[in-house]
Amino acid sequence: HHLLRNLNNTGEQVTLTSFLLHQPFSQNEGPTAFKNTALAEFVIQKRSFNLLIKEYSKKDHRNMDCFVCFILSHGEKDKIKGVDDECVNIEELTSCFTGTNCPSLAGKPKVFIIQACQGMSRHRSVTVEADSTEHLEEDATPSISIPDKADFLIGMATVEDCQAFRNPKSGSVYIQSLCKKMEFRVDFITILTKVNQELAEQEFGGSKQMPKITSTLLMKLIFEIPQCKMEK
Amino acid sequence: HHLLRNLNNTGEQVTLTSFLLHQPFSQNEGPTAFKNTALAEFVIQKRSFNLLIKEYSKKDHRNMDCFVCFILSHGEKDKIKGVDDECVNIEELTSCFTGTNCPSLAGKPKVFIIQACQGMSRHRSVTVEADSTEHLEEDATPSISIPDKADFLIGMATVEDCQAFRNPKSGSVYIQSLCKKMEFRVDFITILTKVNQELAEQEFGGSKQMPKITSTLLMKLIFEIPQCKMEK
Image (cartoon, rainbow over all chains, first blue to last red; front, top):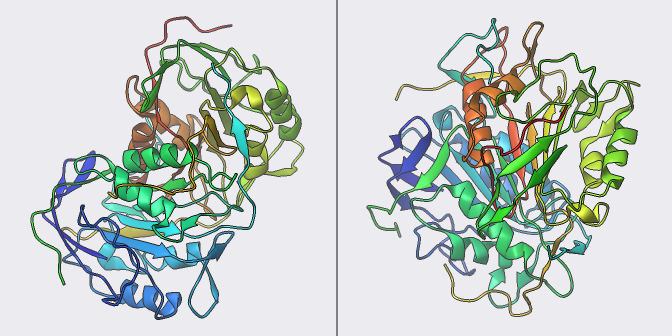
């Protein structure tokens, strides 16, 4: 969860110019991803997902400009596992942060980066061969309201049914690739597309991994070089 | 389905410089979307989806550089209806075009633009307040193979469970917005994000509509100004 300030909204993109970092667990043993880029990964291992996520969704985010949540766990199709081995539906988790359920984040980007298997299948490999109309809805009236489920960006380590790989030493290959490709001043979906490419080209014990991007963002999301330092 | 030639692959983006258009039904009565931009919509109304889609997936696409399919129909959660009122799972449809099932499209972008309700819920409105690491997987070896489910871009008119609106005169508000926002030389996800924004700001009989973008693309997809004319 990030404290993001100085929102620069140009109509087509939202640029986050300055943000503080807050990690829920100081005992985090995993590799601190994004350490060079002022984004951090959450290893949620001490409490049940449901409780923790609901706790976050109940907080007052009025002074925040964006919500970023990294989840690293095991999972099944459309689900992730908590430490209590209970599976939680991903849609159920993210829905805690819709405009209705978390009004202080309405109209702000909500980013979920999820490292978890989505089934037991090994992703098949495939070899690549070398080789406007004038007017809108008449009953559509402009408003300052937006859909409840707007502004979500979900980065999944893998498409449905498949495995997501972890290296015993360096951890999640998805998170590692994201750290490597992370850049300031570049639209975040472009960065996730580069992660798609990097992982797609590799092989993990004879198997493939294909990350998936899902977006209901209304603008490009761009992280500027942070102006303030990480919070302890 | 488009015939796309002169692929320009710069490593980070695929630019389609020239393409022919092929419409499956000349009797298409719907508004011809993309008429200014050389993309066309398919109104699949004469045959069952399954058959038609399978027919397309069996074709030889070796001379093609991209596959674009517009589907306008009714639907339920994760499903779309054919003329026979049979529901087909969207994942089942798109899986006909994975690298394994359609080798001649392997490594090429496969775009599905889907106008269909995803449930009966009216999308809630919410008011907006005015206010890199050094090395990767050790067991990862570079290869020219990619994951089976790579290169998909799916534009859905709405998120799951919700309705997608049509104007009796001008048709699908999603397709209409896409026609309006369509631009050459601009990355296609950026265009779909503009569609997200345009629709999110509007209201349809007191209800909202939030489109959804899902991507396993490995590069930005950019349509260049077409070099050849539409096929009759």
